[in-house]
Length: 205
Length: 96
Image: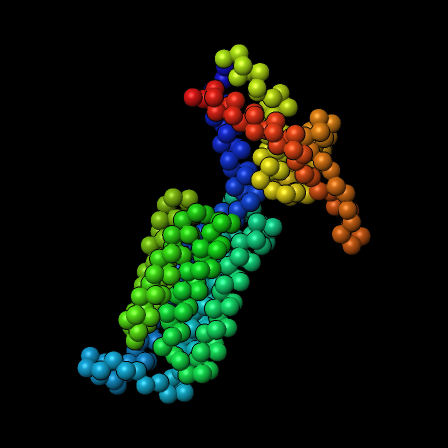
């Protein structure tokens, strides 16, 4: 009786079930890079928002239209470069895993992410246009978290807990409104770095 | 011990056939090319293993056209799923 053969069979079965249903090629490195980019962006944004304001005394940020446009620009550049770098590292890993960046598992994963993410994004743009700037930071965190929880069924299971953490951070930042940038730094910066590092060591690059 | 060995299914002893069934029990249907990529096997090799599973009625074939291109989808039959589950259970028993 060859036990080793059956242990290997079970491993194969699990591997194929995972690869045929889930997008398992998320790269840890791309998480770390996204996190660092987010921290840099928040740092720049912080300096723009709170320049010439005595924020230790009263934490009210008065934003001119120019400043808002500048912040919007920073946010767009950060999001686009994060997505591009994320795709780059993920495609490298997908090649190693013998998966494609655009197969049915990946599509399922992207779609499950996209639905909550797009609804949240549109909501935030509407709020911005109506002038509710302060609500944007918490809501982006909450919707990002919901997207991750939703997408986690189609990818590595750790993503679910990351999503829940993002939702909690988002809710906290509604309670402590006015500290949105700090919660952004924690949610999009710190958590991505922590999870990216963890995934990198657990699943390899 | 004897019973467990009876439950092991010869049809799933081969790595390719084991792989095909693993993919088909967790997906509604999988097409030929996806299976090929998933298992990293040649067309001929995959086709012959699919035929043998088909002849045992563990899987079903659906042919359709996407535009002008023919596409072949495979599904696990309920008896195929049952047999595969039995096979996995037997392996688990053996490894206990």
